[in-house]
Image (cartoon, rainbow, N blue to C red):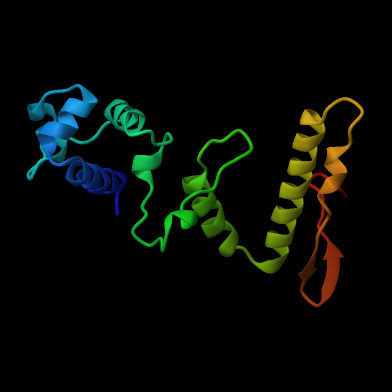
Length: 157
């Protein structure tokens, strides 16, 4: 399903929940004609980024919410992944998962080792003066082939 198809499906769900195009348009502060152009029975325009952002804001949804294909999710918990700063990361997490699932064991071990070192550096950079939060995340060992090896740090020899 394309991003435009996902946006159209989700907007139509909001329109139905709102009670129709007129109420939806009123909530957004735009004309019925404009809504009909992107969400009507035969839309003639795509839902652009500015309109998508306006819809998400009007409904109290996080940025990017209209682009999430939730058709395969079993419940809302399957969709919500937030970073420490509260931003939505569902799309990025799905893409990362897809990429990681395609790697062989050795490459996956290298990638995960790199991600652990990146997380450690990020925690060190944001840790309060005198604190050592970076050591709170244990280093994980991954199996590569028949032997167990610690995750290799990016740039380590």
